[in-house]
Amino acid sequence: MSRISVVVNGTQQSHEVEPRQLLVHFLREVLGLTGTHVGCDTSQCGSCTVLLDGRTVKSCTVLAVQADGSEVLTVEGLASGGRLHPIQESFWEEHGLQCGFCTPGILLAAVGLLRDDPQPGEQAIRSGIEGNLCRCTGYHNIVKAIQSAARKMAATSSGAGPARAPASTGGRP
Ligand code: FES
Ligand code: FES
Image (spheres, rainbow, N blue to C red):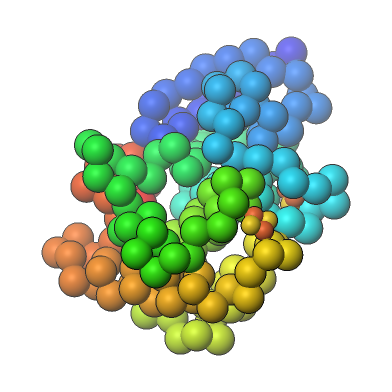
């Protein structure tokens, strides 16, 4: 077993893990953060997407020990103080929400996309979420939701993110 220390959604976590344990299983089974899902065994679907030190990763492809000393943001960390993150608001308003299995990963992919490119065009959005698969949508409303979120986030003084982002993410959502 190896001890790891990770800041997850702004909270310091320290746990013994098996060196082979995947980050997604650490999040779900050790921390009880079941909003991050395993939708495939082939690193294809993106339903396990989280932010690791501000970058989107498929947490089924990362070992928990590799996250030692890092910061993780999951879907549970998006809302703050009873307020939805702008990306959550926009998915709601633009009917971009899909099922509970794929949506958390899509939301995190969108947050990561807007962090890197605050005003993406439609093609950039489609490219940015191409790692998140859903067989049930044409992605049209998802694209609209991300465009809407980009406008909302640009209109805020902070430029991005919820009121309470984990401090060590540098203010990023
Ligand atoms: Fe990670 Fe499908 S569960 S990509
Ligand atoms: Fe979630 Fe299609 S996989 S709605």
